[in-house]
Length: 281
Ligand SMILES: CSC[C@H]1O[C@H](OP(=O)(O)O)[C@H](O)[C@@H]1O
Ligand SMILES: Nc1ncnc2[nH]cnc12
Image (tube, rainbow, N blue to C red; front, side, top):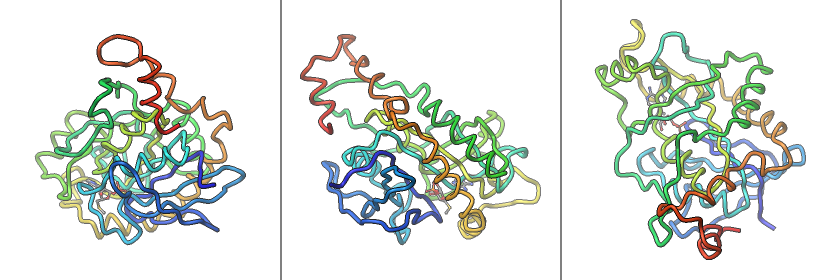
């Protein structure tokens, strides 16, 4: 039986995680995910891994089929998602090599397919607190136990890409007080919430965004990947440790219960709505 409890999305420089994997092709109503899903058991927990850019990094951030990726995880049974990423820093005190467990995002993307609710169910899911508090607490613990500098909160600005930011854009984000910049957290994290999965981000800081640090003029992908690679064993260990900490009672770390009460017209969801909404169950 192809199933998993915990899903992990790998990002730039993060194309594999598990050993003794079973590779499964998953089809979705939104088309194919970025790659096959890799299934394995880690400390008794059933885990699914999916590299969001594909295993050979052939899909740029603005072309990822986020709905297919998130649906694939949910259709396998995942109740929570670990969503690590490479990210730039917008503040001097957040240095390359540090990890940030973001608690907010700012969406600066455009034109991405970013909802499952295109009708007939009309509902408005709140992204006010997209990231799951228990998963965040456990991630912070895992990072600290590995001796890595951890920022316990942070706002990630998600830009459309594939280009990086101009110095003026970067200064704008810096002046707003936001800490982290990336191209993939939106809509990935929000879509997890729409399907009732708890989600946690771990941002591995690979660079100072352009102009943030006097010594760093312009970000480039080569340097980002080099810094990521030199920290890739650390992030993998943190993800594996976090998997071991996630409670077996997954209802504690999913958000399904929140969602049954969020229909757009103010009425409670009918049994039929819930059946459609929970089509994946
Ligand atoms: C390789 S530089 C830009 C690239 O790195 C980040 O990837 P991911 O979020 O998948 O780890 C960023 O979002 C861009 O896609
Ligand atoms: N500076 C940056 N901007 C956007 N995405 C990134 N991913 C890694 N570093 C980044």
